[in-house]
Length: 202
Image (spheres, rainbow, N blue to C red):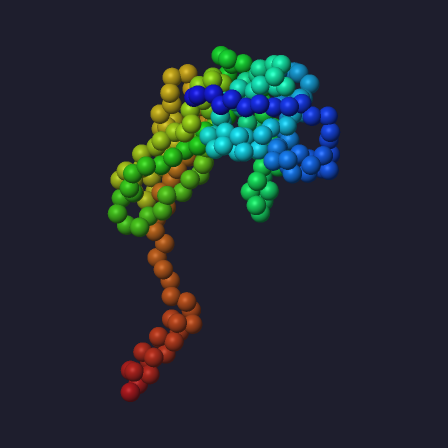
């Protein structure tokens, strides 16, 4: 995984009012924590951070006040529920070679067996342990030809070298559900039955 470079500034103002002022300047408040150090309150350029977070578990190389450089991964991202803009971000401090537990998105590819069956994502992301600088962007799983009742378990997902499961091997990731037969509304069914009876009497 490539690194995304971001500049950050330490902030000394806190509270909702300060956060609103920061966002009005097209910036995003956040916190960097980890390795037993005191949480560091930072401000990030909003547009650059938004672009960086398009990549799940992105590795961020932080330039803080032009004085120190740190590596971090996103741990928690808060967005406005209506407009979707970033409100706050928590970043976890990491070191090269360090193992971290993250959730990696699962992407299904291929066509299910004919019959109108449905694919359910029981786990949209798979918890794994990986080196902080080598976190996979996603796991691609083939569902080609799977029939109703079939499941893909965590142990069935092919993991890159150095990546291990952080969930039970038998945990269901994907499963194929049988197509539901469409049922006519009760009123329509009763009406059809009445029509048939009237026709028989005639």
